[in-house]
Image (tube, rainbow, N blue to C red; front, side):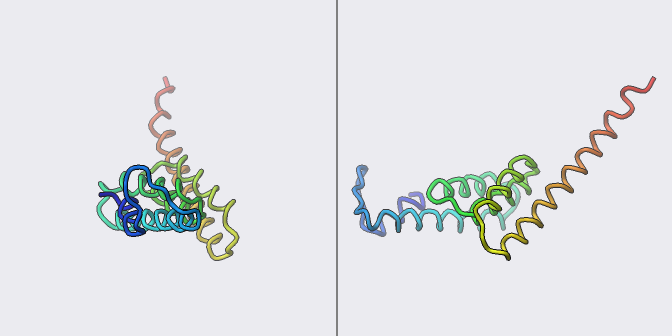
Length: 135
């Protein structure tokens, strides 16, 4: 049983065609998003083989509720997987959604890591291909 189903069952929602009262729908979505963000944190603290599960949890959390924290955490996951483009996109989206100056500083710090990673990658490419065209 996945986390979202467990949360729905905890709210007393059963069956395939779950009819959820409107007032509980927002609460259920928030619980699903929160649960998936917590799962993301757990996966990220484990070994690197769990990063695909962490990424999936972050994506699922964002499917339920778009938050700067969700994009920030997924960006960190992308960064650990050395997915520069994915990290940059998520950190920039987190920056767009966020209004907290403390979080903005953390986002800028992570974007600086993305830039450093890009520079290292460019240097590796120059080194690898630099001698290719010399005669």
